[in-house]
Picture 1 (cartoon, rainbow, N blue to C red):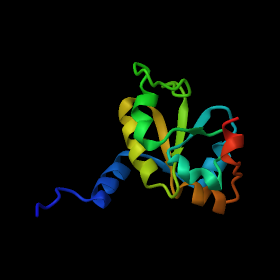
Picture 2 (tube, helix red, strand yellow; picture 1 turned 30 degrees about the vertical axis):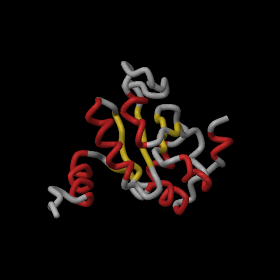
Picture 3 (cartoon, rainbow, N blue to C red; picture 1 turned 90 degrees about the vertical axis):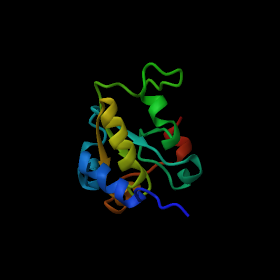
Length: 133
């Protein structure tokens, strides 16, 4: 059996060295100021517990295509002139996405602890249907 070259934990540690992370309290303070776009990268089947209001939902598997203005899949919510806060359930997958989008040229930070930390800090959450309406 072949040995893997690097573990997921090691990849995560490397990504976290290259990105900035903010606390849930700081994210709550930045939310709604009109300057920041929140991006939820969880899979659709994880959204039953809601999203941060005004969030742009883009599953991790499509993020590079949705963020690339030259892609046929480009999502207009992605604009290199805007600032972004990326999150997932607890901040692991979003750390990888934050690293990738930062490399693409986006001004983006990771919400440390994800939506769980947001909720624990008293941040508002809306049902997925409301967030996408």
